[in-house]
Length: 79
Image (cartoon, rainbow, N blue to C red):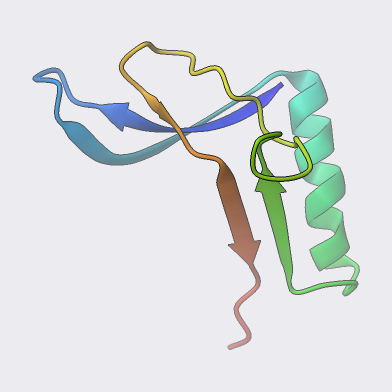
């Protein structure tokens, strides 16, 4: 299980916070995908919900007030 969500503040407005929830299986999956960047196979990894793509991300929020994000892109910056 792995979800990416936008949180809410106590007054119900959207926060500027991204919340990532995962269990051990989701953590292992995240490490495996990020290892492609570490190994030089790619410069980015995209995770998507089933309705947007591969189904890497679950679509059920962990807090009723959160909004599910359907796409997470992580990119290595060359400095």
